[in-house]
Length: 276
Image (cartoon, rainbow, N blue to C red; front, side):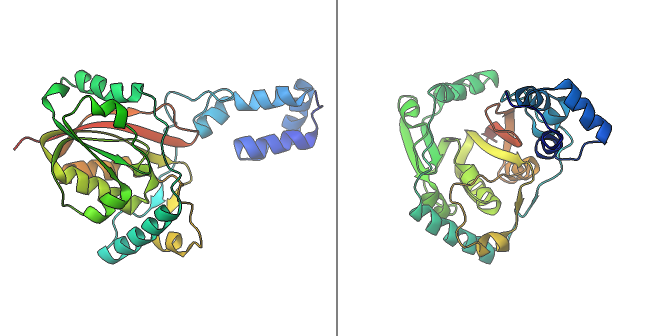
């Protein structure tokens, strides 16, 4: 095992806690307490401060919930039609060039839809037609095939080009797809889909609602030479709730996805559209 130096302690504070040690005395105290790098690393990774800053407790063990003191994300959601068209055109060009988005899905995630509906007192058997939104893969395809008489798969190229037209459906599902879109496009696609959802219809979808230190400026994003087509984006919960209100939907359940990495909040929502 490698021995711990003053530089190691200082760098642990900077890299893992994002700050300087309080004093030289604190550094010396760590040197006296920890004699191996493995001990020092474990102490920092399992500290309350590290867990509070990152949402992780222990070495690789996620907390059930994220800290409440994280700052707001600085991002643009509502943009004009011209900017929306520019973002759409750029994203579609990137998507055609990079098709590596297919999601690996556990079959249990399809069963989660039925369980969520049951918790909300909704009979899933009454629904017949399903739209699955995907980015480069058919996430729920196998599991949904036996549950609904009619199933349509729409990827982002279809959704971004369809606007608010297309056949209606009474169930909408999506996972790890909406987060591939920049916030204005994410909001646009989600709004378009929920507007087409039949009255009384059900939506069960996952999206990122917070990323620590995430920012999105449309002009800056458009100005990048080669934006990463697979980067994750988020849509704040208040923006999601506004979309639900505008489209006549209400949330029956919202749950935090414990599989999200450190510094990220991922939510599953079960939503129903108002009758009539």
